[in-house]
Each structure stands twice: as structure tokens, then as C-alpha cells.
View 1 (cartoon, rainbow, N blue to C red):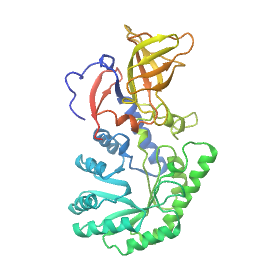
View 2: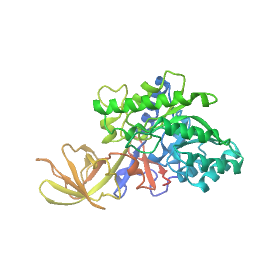
View 3: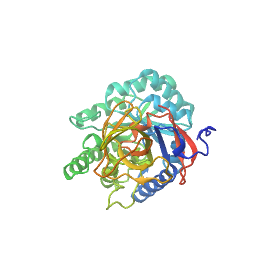
View 4: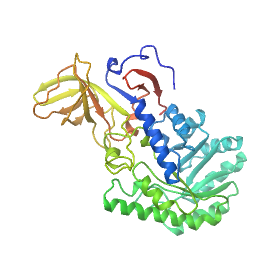
Length: 387
């Protein structure tokens, strides 16, 4: 964690100028322990996606809770993770930039850095081979399995065979297994979506069986965003492979998309994650009955997977936060939230409103320093992000 600045240390979050995002330390710790326990019980490793937070302080807590590495989406993220001492990184993409491939090869050759990336083309293998040979390294890769009309990844067995042949010709590229992202197949947990995800994962498992003879040591199967890691464990475990899930959003969870769709939320969940990231704003105008405006907008809270959700209000002059039931954010401008209020509910200028968010990834990237609050609402630390 970064040192707390004197202007924030020891202050109540309700004294901070709005808008601000805040992390609930107790909820974070609960989520870390809950996910770690779930992974142990299901026989999978966790390499959480670091793009969710890009917060080295949280990476350290995830690793301390049992994560075996951190996942990155871009070479720039790999560099941040390496700079902050993350010992093992999975790049969930093809490393297609020769200069960045050369840097990675140098880091691998220097020792003390576990790295693997995905490949889905002979071209990608060739780029890695050139960089690794020049740097005297051997770079581990996972063959990416995609789906027709989906995101990246090989589409057919013929595509996979072409990549395997390229790896066979590349002495400095080592195949360690297969990987993919089932979240590009479906975006909710309805029965048809779950069936589509299971079908995709069965294809990924079959692809693993195809390449198992090319792999020295344990075959790696990696899948699992934040919505279907239970299906991943069900389909991919049991065959002796090393199964690595990559959920990133579990660490803070949310009040929207993942609250509705996480395997660790809902009445039938074996344990419940908690929303650890919220955004606070102040009512700056209440010009009409049933409507108020906050000083929170698109610059402050995610909106790509649903608008913020009003959770509670701290009335001006009060010390008690109370639920704000039935209110709805209907629109966001750059620095305003439009709040519709149910009959019988009013907000006054100066009231403070707590907003839950949907999709934490795109709230984290709006803040460089996020206060960390204890159970009493007092700031204990500040979490820095590195986007």
C-alpha cells in the first residue's frame, strides 16, 4: 500500500470531498478468503485478472491469499506487474509486438519470472521464436481456443494443428496447454447461456487432449472469467490437468452485473461475495419533485454494463447512513447523475448518496488513488492504480 497522505489519514470517508470511490477493507478480505476457499474446494488454481484493478497492493493481497500468479491483458500490464514483483504472469493474449516480445524474453532469460502467453496463429509463434532465440529464453505458451463469431482464438482443429506445427518448428517456444475465454460465448446465467458455455468448455477440454502429447509435465487448462468459473471447474477438472481460473472481479464484486451472475452470489451460492467498491456523490440539485442530481458522472463510475445503483443516503447534518430504496440512476453526464426517486422519497441539496457499481473494471480505471476504509468508515490506507 502507498503511505496515506496526511489530508486523508484517519478521516471518515464522509468528510472526503465528493465524488470519490472507496474500498471496504472488510469486504475485500472476505472476498479474498471466500474465493481462495472455493478454489481449494474445487481443485483449481487462481491467477486473477489484474486488469480489473491494476492495483499492485491488491495483487499482493491476492497472492498472499493463495493466487499462483496474476493475469494480464497487455504487455504494458505485464511490465507493471513485473515492476511490482509479481512472480508469475499469464498474458491472456497473443504477444504480437516484437519489441515487447523481446523484453519478455529478456525477463524470462534473467530468471525468477514465470511467464506464459497465448498463441492462436503461426505468425504469433514466429514473433515469439524470433524474440526468444535472440534473448536465449524459452517462452511458455497456451494454445488459445476460440469459437466461430467469438473473440480471438483458433476456430477449428485444423487451425490448432497449424499452430502446433509452428510450435514444433520453434525450439524457443514451449507448449504447456490450452486456454480460452468462455465469457465471449455468453453474458448471463440463463439455461441457454450455461449450455453454450459448457459446450465451449468441452471443446477446450478436447483441445487439451489433442495437445497433451506435446506437453512435458502437467497439461495446463486455463479458462474462467468472473461469471462461469463454476462451470469451468465442473468441465475441466478430473482429468489430471492443472486447471487455472482467471476471475478478476471477485476481489471487489459489484452491485450489478456480477451481483446478478456470479457463482458466489444469489440464494443458492455456497458463500456470498460482498460489494467492496462503491462511489459516493453529493446532491447538487433537486429542482423537481422526484428528481435529484449528483456530482457523479461518467468520469467517476462505470456505465458500460449498467448504470450505478443508489444504495444509501447520508442526509446533510446527519451521522447515520440509511438505505435509499427504490431510487434509480436513469442517466449519466460527464459529471452528473440523474436520479429518479419513488413517491414519498426526497433528496435534499447536500445529502450524500452511496452508489453501487456494475462492472468494477471500468470504475477502477477512473481513479488513481482509492481510499481504503475500515469497518468504522475511517480511512486506513490508499490503494494506487497503475493504468
